[in-house]
Image 1 (cartoon, rainbow, N blue to C red):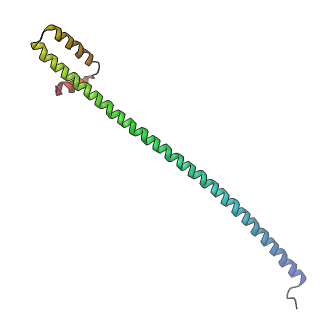
Image 2: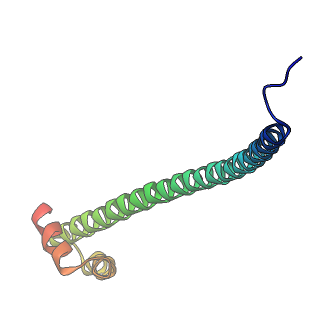
Length: 129
């Protein structure tokens, strides 16, 4: 069987083939290393996302609690102002028609109410009363 390549050409082709195989194997190793690195980064990314989602949920829950607390505090303040307004009105009504003992006890209750009110609250309570 006749050979189309000379010995030198054959050696050169074999050397080139060996170099191409080595480059291919190096590329395969680099590909696997890159794939592993990407998988690792993806895992870290997913963990970070999960952690951040948890933190967001906690912050949202805390925010909702803060809002609810604020609503309840406002309601308590409103009820305090309303109660004090009613007590003042009751005191005015009893002052005109009652004995001094009930008036003095009513005065002490109204005095306690004044600690709950702001000047704005007193005006609002007086308007409602």
